[in-house]
Length: 332
Image (spheres, rainbow, N blue to C red):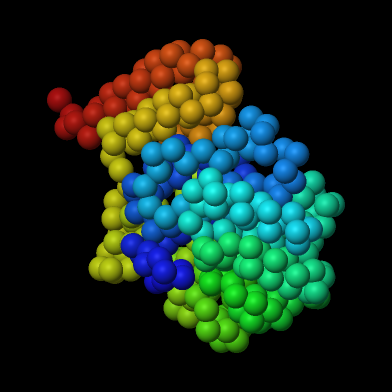
């Protein structure tokens, strides 16, 4: 699929997630099959652009592929300035966040809170589109609450004002991440507009990706939580869409290499103190199916040294490998 002048390698996208889709994770997901990866959202408030958190989020050094940067805010002028700033910093696509349900974002009338105010939505889109010469995309939810699913109206406003593609999470703001995503509204949006529509929400397997694409008619899918601890999900989905066959998850030896590389890159990117802390959640996600009693996670989360973290992972996987070898060895 295309977004403006850019032809994507496939129609599978990594959703922007605050505190998750940093440079190390984006690079890994891109390498493992994502056609487009989107950065963590950046505030349109210029007062925070020089903070350590914002500087880390703006770091795209060494990244391959198209650089898509998400911005969030409620003031059209500030959003336009943020778009310009990020394009000057290397962004090739600007994505507007109107989907985040977090209270700290919504209390500033940003994120999915904007869906209550179509006039403001239109003003922000116009301001951003007119401010930059790169494609502008939009991410929304289906509405503010189940009684007010105005996603189709917002989608029409987006298309009429120059948005190049639209990602839709199949929940309202009020739903947060509870319950199951619904795809009827996404299907209605796809039927109502002609720009690419990307379906998002609860896509955690190749079969679900195919099902959602078939039902909604969407041009692509966006994976968020489904990629946490499973960055290879993009490769699995692409293989399934092309062949109808399931690609096995990585064996323990490859899982170890991926996790070791990811943790080392996180430590290097953030430094030993913050890197050690941030690595913990990723290790928990990767090992959820192996560390079912969470004993290793408890041990790992108590480690405060970067090298000790890597040593602990090595010892854990050696023990897993030994156990697996014993299970498949024939009885004497």
